[in-house]
Length: 272
Image (tube, rainbow, N blue to C red):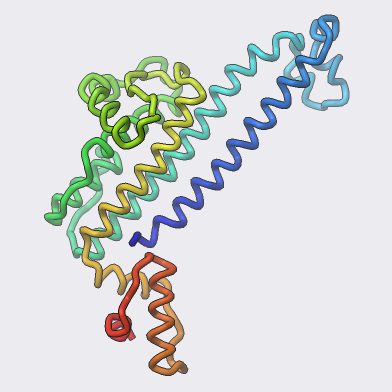
């Protein structure tokens, strides 16, 4: 069983993965082609060796120096992918809070001084619902604070990020090594530039895992009947001209496709 948000969120993540792999593919091909040039050719400037490329003069450096520039370019690009992935995660949590509020009729107003992960916990607490595992929440908080440092081009980490690393890095490392034995993240770095490509992939993968684990937790702790009603309101069916049997079947299939829940005939009948 899943919430209505899970599939579209994972689809967005998968689409971003394709873009990332395309970038890395082009990057590798670029390196291969540069390596084939002679030393004399590498001493030329980009506008001379790549005279047909209308952007070569914008770069204007010796070809042999391109790999050095490429390192900083890769860091900026990977930082952008990381930040976009976090935005998908953040939007998912904010929409999930609305679902929790609607399904369990919780009167909660989002706090602008809290991150989405903390707002989710506060909303669950207000509704007397079991909160999400703190290690997942602190992992998302770590990603959020790291993303803030990236987009604000900060040279030093915030006190909040430093305090989180000091207090929770060991717990997070141990938790994720149990969840995923191949995980190599230690959660002690406060500078995105220090992460290897493999470690960045690990963080990107963990964002997907966090979404899945949160969704699995929420879906069994909210009012299921209200969730189904909200789903049917959001994605209504045309049932008027159908027979009773066809109405039941259509509702069963609809709910299964949207939230992976098998309704009995009697249960489906109650939503006609």
